Length: 117
Image 1 (cartoon, rainbow, N blue to C red):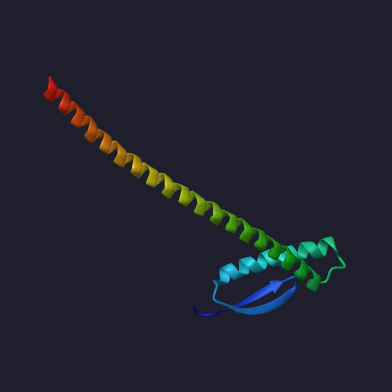
Image 2: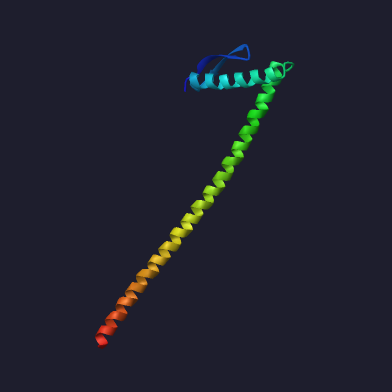
């Protein structure tokens, strides 16, 4: 993928970055970061841009970690559901085979009864 050269403005500072992501996507992310950093600096006027960036980074890492844990839990649950479904399918096949055997046996018994009458 080609690199896109993208100009950003975050918390009053201009940055130019290269990214393979679309400019629209990067600008959207920069907008979220800019908003989050500005809120931190408004709530704590003594907070520097660096402090706001560190707080945002920690917040984002915390969200990422929780999302990863949630995704891992979902993968474990999905794996268990698939195993349960496979077990149920296997049991259903066994029951189907047994039913076919019973049908054959029933037909045999009906034929035997008919021959004895």
